[in-house]
Length: 268
Image (cartoon, rainbow, N blue to C red; front, side, top):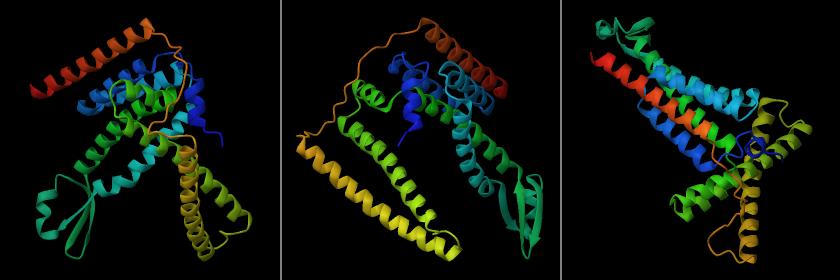
């Protein structure tokens, strides 16, 4: 199974840049995102998108698909934030907050202006944070990312768990695709009832095959003398870029300055 994320991580234009430099840059922007206002978060998203799509050469279609998936999750949570309800007797408390609403018996259900603002704030923070995450995912191979985490002091046990989880995620996806294709070829989803039965069988077989795969991995590690640490070799062929370093520092300084200016304007 060809993993497109891994392929892009190994073939992007920033592959030669040291992973420590890329990880530090993404972490700094993630920290700024956590304390920034929505306008600054939008700037962070567009700036990180430029680094990912233009500098790293990641296909825009692939990157937009990842952003689209994250936006779908946000859309599923938006109704819970935007739609509120209150008793009709307390209607005066929400007159300024209600955009439009309907009365159902003794309750008034309305779309909240503050709820929509809160949803938009969550969206800007989410896409800014995810752009930092996507930059790391698409420009640093996972094995090198784990090596970097070990060098900065992350416990070996945690990095080993991350490596196994990363592997089993794709094993799970590959097994699901195979089972789904086999069921589709046999007309397993022609009707709703047949589809539910096929889905139940798929989940059961998926659990069974996952446990079998786990046992095979455990036996193979034990046969190779596994001592509690998975060592992955990779050549250290990186070099620093002064231009990228200066651009990252200046950009972060500008974003911090904009955030301080925004905060000062709100205080005054």
